[in-house]
Image 1 (spheres, rainbow, N blue to C red):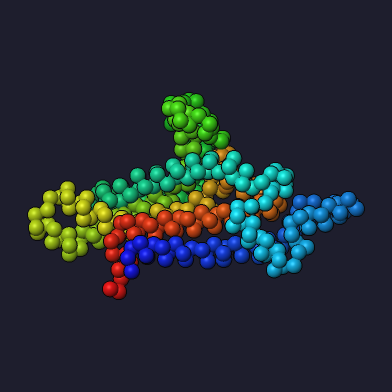
Image 2: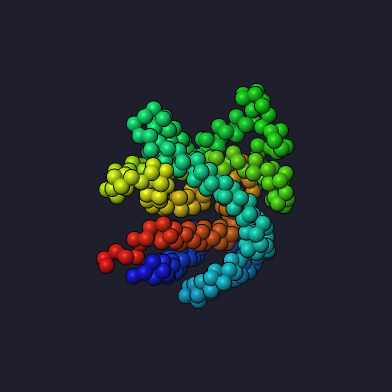
Amino acid sequence: MSRLQYFLKRLALSVPVLFFGATLTFVIFRFGPIDPAAAIVGEAATEASRAEYQRIRVQLGLEQPVLEHYQQFMVDFFTLNLGQSWVLAPGTDVVDLLLIYGPRTAWLAFWAVLIPIFVGIPMGVYAGLRSNTMTDYSLSLFGIVWRAMPNFWLAIILLAVLSQSDALIGFDWNAFLVETSVTGTPDLSNITSPAGFAAATKQVLPAAIVLGSASMGSELRIARTAVLETINSNYVETAKANGVSERSLVWKHILRNSMIPLVPTITNEAFLLIGGSVIVEVVFGINGIGWLFFQAAINGDLPLVVALVFVFIVVVVIMNIVQDLLYVLIDPRVGYEGR
């Protein structure tokens, strides 16, 4: 099996995963403990409310036979007809809401991924190349402590420190470089200009640090372990015996092979971004998909919650496809097992 065939096979396997996720979402929507029509209408027991309740059940498809409703549900979801919000933004398509709130979460996620990749991995590689030294011990301890801090606790502490930064650390965070607040939604309308880019980046930086903190600690420790295992490999010893320079040894032999166990760690950050963004966006007031999901959940906007759950499933499946693609590009042995 070639690497292309291996990747196409993995890509095909993602289709039943999507069907299973959509089916599970339908079951929660149709047979879950919350009646979406009752959540939309409220607790009023008037004649008008009962008529409205029945109308909404018909519009949501809850009066259809289960099989017919399931077929329509699946067709709608896989054609991106995700329905409408009924409580937060009555009558607004979910796709329109995603276009409004999605870029904010994407901007937060972008920095939340870059921070652990360009901070955690280099620190882990550096520690592995200088194992059993004070630098190694210090970086390893830093990774363990940083990994152990819960996101919600770190978010609150960072929010408190930056809100009182003038008194606590000697400078005003709000006025640093560009004028922004500690909390709030980043303005992405002027992101192409240097000033707009700086302001939007600074606005989400504290939240991105919190969201990427767990990944940074994990990537630091895994990168260190991977480098140590690679250094002790036979092919590295052979390269040393053949007179390969240290620079070429590190970049060509050690780093590339050390990246292989890091691929699932990096791509699995999708789970952290999905789960952690809800808490982080609420704490820092970033009105993104996580904040929208939280508001939909506490306000009983079940059609919107169900649509967002399906979107989260699609994101996770896409990240798994990216993971398989990275494996194919980094490791030439992929697809050739058993030959």
